[in-house]
Image 1 (cartoon, one colour):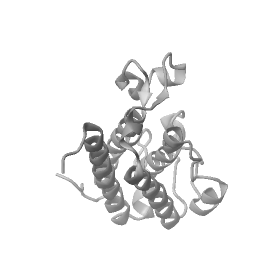
Image 2 (tube, rainbow, N blue to C red; image 1 turned 90 degrees about the horizontal axis):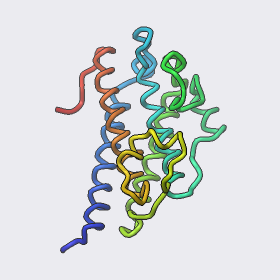
Image 3 (cartoon, rainbow, N blue to C red; image 1 turned 90 degrees about the vertical axis):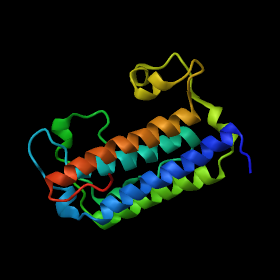
Image 4 (cartoon, one colour; image 1 turned 180 degrees about the horizontal axis):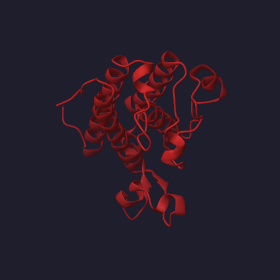
Length: 192
């Protein structure tokens, strides 16, 4: 069956997001709190930072794309018990080296809830929605210096840009950090 270019893009996004999420599930399934909360040294973020940062940013970015409120709230914080209840995007490394996950199993449940919601949305997304503009230029200062603003076309940051930059490419970046950090805690990488 022939697909339109927009249908091909949605199909590709569905597969890539599910594959990337599977890497995160493989990572969390092969680590424990002693690995993710390990403090290597000053200036080196713990795996807990990368895991929570990316999951919580996917949760927040999903709202920018869909208008649906984030899942993370006070009840989740009470369950997961993050040492710093913040994804840390606008905080320093000196702050975020203290990030720890209190209840690792609850964090894994939060992560699965966020990832499942994203995949369900992609499964039902109309291909024409890819071109919907989320943020038009001129960009506010907090957006103007971002990777997504650099990638955007003249019309602005679209739904496709949001999925590609905020969710997919951002997720791969932090998965690379996690794979590297796994070596610091005595675990191997996961992909070749």
